[in-house]
Length: 459
Image (tube, rainbow, N blue to C red; front, side, top):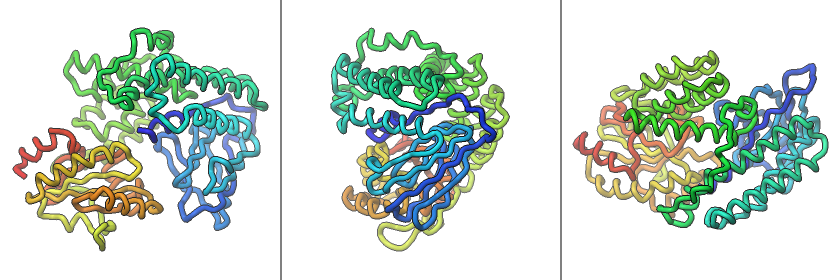
């Protein structure tokens, strides 16, 4: 949870008015010293776009970027650099891989905004501190005061920063307020988690500041990820009401709810984001896709989702499962899916850095124990980066993980991961003894539905 919350806090999306420029692209260059063999990539924040950047032996690199994506994330396998890009920007990014936070320096055209963002994130980290338990364990008044102190400090930093346009400042001031409001929404669930008080509810007036939000502001939707998150949360609540009223699946309810939004920018954005992240988990992909296509008016988005849909159709129950070949086995040698034919195969796709994945381990051990003499093989596939291979081995040993423990050949870019359209973990897959898919989104070990499924199959 800590990683997720930190990611939410440091992830900011800004779109400032473009300067008059003869070019419609930006240039990024720089040097990363003391870098191991990790590749570096340039990515969109939602991972719908990712490309490798060529880097020389001395750590130097240069690339040209389309400015349609905001923000970009330069990633070396460990350290993320969030970048605001505009037409004509020419940014030079330099840092020491081993001392990222103290050595990161951005210079060149457009550096003023990006250095503001670095300083802004430092304020968040410094004022929140290392203990999320202390932050979210505080009472309502203390919590609000802490979050407000962060935005006050960031507003002062924004005002004091030189070389930033007044139009950008106006947008960023609104964005800082959206950050504050989003953090209010996060408080109840986070407080429950850190205090172990599952009955906790915020007071009636704790969220009253959200009543003033206008959920139809296209400009804010396009430049502020926190505003986008507030809009998404708003329509998720509405979808929940429809789901309960009409007894339909939550993913279908969300598509129906969002389809009524008058703004095409907001409607298409929410539809595309949801389909990108959720369609692979739908229990009725055909109905989901049909509803999406009927309501999305963005041709580019529709083409991408259609491509995704065509791949998902191949993952229906009874279809041959995609294969993995020669994945490194913790016990030595390699293992392929073909080696496991003749048994049901329950696959857990996970990583050492994934909190929810770790949370499923106790339940997975219990299920493995219960079915240790049955015709089923339990396989865990780590999608950690190659640089974390030893970390994976250590965790397998320390947590005494059972079953077949495998290491994927190319983390998120492994063929098996891409073929199954996996964009979030943990992910569980059940394959029959003939190598055909039983369920490409099988229940988690902690869910009673998993044992129900095993019983139906007479495993």
